[in-house]
Image (cartoon, rainbow, N blue to C red; front, side):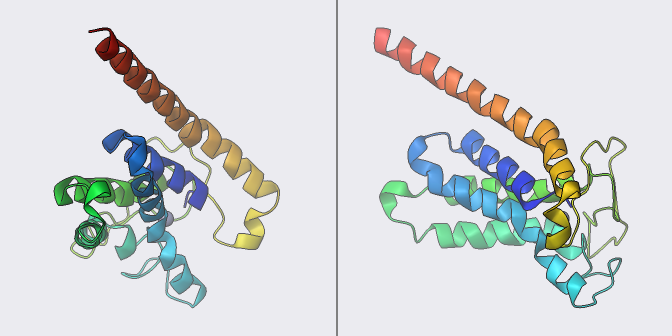
Length: 185
Ligand SMILES: [Zn+2]
């Protein structure tokens, strides 16, 4: 897996991209949480669920189906939000689907473990992309707080946080330019 930080950064960035107005920041947080959510299966891994099984790590919880279920559930819950901050169910579902699915995409770009069962439960094959620049994060929390964790964070900084930060800056610039030109018209 990539670390929870790497996943959350990409999820929040998708939130900023799809719902750029600052008042929607709680949705950025929700997207960050959804992006980290599939690794809930690492609890099963610790309890002895085989890595390469249906419920194993990077299995069903990392599939596109799981992302669709999270998106549909989240969009339903989103309709309970007060009207002033509510966004359309379709927009919210799209954000939650993309942020949850982004998890598998990042994992398929990592250097270790088994691949991602994107099409589970119909196809249990595990997939990796041909290009895998992100150093895999250890499953054990203890192992993460050491030298290998620092190497993972450095790798994620380069391949996830930096591109995301550039996108945030770019979106901010576009927004400022649009607001300035609107004020002048
Ligand atoms: Zn994962």
